[in-house]
Length: 192
Image (tube, rainbow, N blue to C red; front, side, top):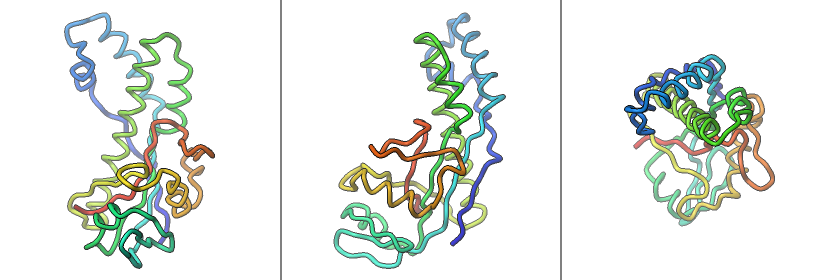
C-alpha cells in the first residue's frame, strides 16, 4: 500500500484545556504567560502523520507479519489476532514546534513549551483517527507501542522500515531508539 502523509493538521487546542490541566485557572499571571506561548505555538505548529494501510499476512504464537515485516511479541500477536489490516503510523508535533520549544529559556517556559508540543502531537493523533474513520471505515482505533508489554523497543526500527522515509515529516529514529522530535509516537494502530 501507499504511504499517506497528513500535513494540514491544525493545532487548535483551547487555552481553557491547558489552564485546567496545569491547574493555573486561578493564577492570572501564569495564564497570561501560557496564553502568549500558546499563541506563538499555534502560529508555527505543523503537526504531521504518516501511515499506511497494511495487511496482516501471517501470525504465529509469538510473531505477526505485517506487510512483509515480522514483529515478535506474544501480546501484539494476541491483540491483532482477529484483524486483517492495521495502520502503522508515526505522529509528531512537528520539527518546527520542537525547535521552537527547545529554544525556550527558563524552567517554566521550557515546561510549558513541552506541554504544547505534546498537545500538538495529540492533535495529530486525533486528526489521524478521524481520517482513518472517514476514509477506511474504521469505527474506533487504538494503538500498540513498541516497548510496551513484551514488544521490544528495538523493533521500532521495523515499524520505521514499513513507513520508508520518516524524514519527509521531519522525524528521525536515532541509533539508541529515541525519536526526534521527542514529542513523536510510532505505533501500530488498529480497530478495536
